[in-house]
Amino acid sequence: EEEFKWLLQEEVHAVLKQLQDILKEASHRFALPAGGAEGAAKQESFVLSTAGTDQVKGVLTLQGDALCQADVNLKMPRSNQLLHFAFREDKQWKLQQIQDARNHVNQAIYLLMKRDVNYHFKTGSEVLKLMDAVMLQLSRARNRLTTPATLTLPEIASSGLTRMFAPALPPDILVNFYINLNKLCLTIYQLHVLQPSTTKNFKPAGGSILHNPGAMFEFGNQRYEVSHVHKVECVVPWLNDALVFFTVSLQLCQQLKDKISVFSSYWNYKPY
Image (cartoon, rainbow, N blue to C red; front, side, top):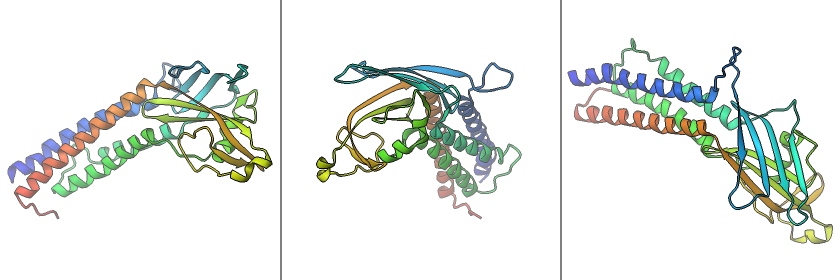
């Protein structure tokens, strides 16, 4: 019993402190504090690349959770004509996945801070409940980065992203940005209009992270088919750091849960 009390007081608080330190590090990665006095996030530029093709080249500039510039060159298949498009100067595109992940990390930190070193844990189940709540937030944070949204082509076509560019995107081009693990990805869809005579086999595609050539959809009373898909990406090192911090934190939580459970089952500690 004494040993269990020691675990509840000393070891639990030691682990909570360790968790808090790791998650604060993770949170700093998302905030990207700058050298500037106003504390705005610093801008970082990344070169887009794709294996085995130079059809798409470009640079993306990220500032915290905002994509503040995208400068992209697309070499059109067949015609080899070069298409250039970039964000308008006054526009930024918020990456909801980064925003959400950061909010979940901060929620986990808040849960840990409410149980500071002076807090007295009375039962093992109280610790287990706290670990479950923290692990839920961390799993959600990780899932936001590892699971991009599935979108239909009409959703991509009607997204505010299409209005971000100067010159405006041609009507036969769609773009989508998303985070996948530690990568910032850009997908460009080239479309062709389906003639009314060919639409008897029209089958609209459902939602997907990445649509394939041949996918069809209807938008603005016009039917389209995807003719080419270009996917390019760049690695964002601090997203990688954040994912590592999530994994380590989840392991720490699980280890503490296992310890408490072992003690509780050895010595049938009254949960209330």
